[in-house]
Image 1: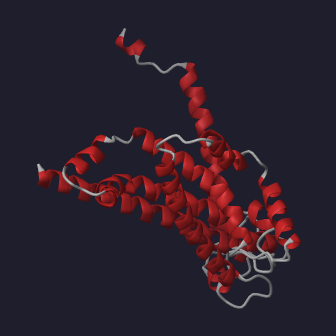
Image 2 (image 1 turned 180 degrees about the vertical axis):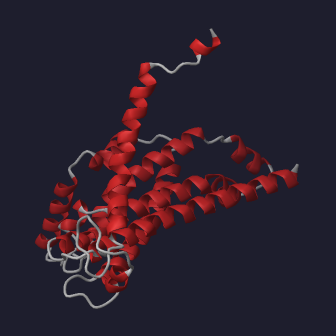
Length: 279
C-alpha cells in the first residue's frame, strides 16, 4: 500500500514535461548563443563550431565598422539606474499616499496601471509624436525615460501596495508611543522594514528598463540604447561578435541580480542580529 501511494500520477509527468520544455525554450537560446560566442577566428554564426577561442570577445571591444557597443551600454546603464531610483521613489511615495483613501483614489490607481494593457509600441509612438509636436528632440534621457517609467511604475506601485497591505501598523504606533516624530518613525521603523522589498522594486525597475525595446524604439532619438543597438547589429553584423555581445549582456544581467540578492541577504542577516541583540 505504501509503495502504491508514493507512485507519481500521470499529471506529475505531464507537468514535469511541460516544465522541461519551458526551461528548454527559456535557456536553450541563451546556451546556444553562449557556446557560439566562443567560435574560433574563422568561425561563423552557426554550428558546427570552427575552433574554440575568445577572439570575438576581444574583437567586441575593438573599433567596429558598425555599432556603438560601449556608448549604447553606458546609456542603457544610466537610463536603467535613473528609472530604478525614480521607480522606487515614486512607488514608495504613492504607497504612503494610498494608505488612506481619498477622493478619486480608485480612478487614479486604475489610471496609473492602465499603461500595462496598452501595447508598448503605441506608448512609444505616442510619446515620440508628442515630443515632435512640442518641438522637443526625442532623446534617451528625456522621452525614453518617460516611456520607461510608464512601464516600470505600474509594477512598482502594485508591489508597494501589496507590501503596505501586509504591513503591521503596530510598529508605527509603538514608535509614536515612545516619542518618535513622524519622520523618525518613517526613517527608523518603516523604511528598514520595507528596505528588502524596495530593493526588489529597484531591481525590477532596472531590469525592465535595461531590457526594454518597444518603448524605446520611437523615443530614444539619435543615440541607441543597448537593446536597440543589438537589434541594429543583427542586420549588419555577420560574425559571432554579436553572440559575444549577447553573452556579456546576459552575464551582466545575472550579475546585477546576484548582487541585489546578496544585498537583500546581508540586510536580513543584519536585521536578525539586531533582533537577537535586542532580545
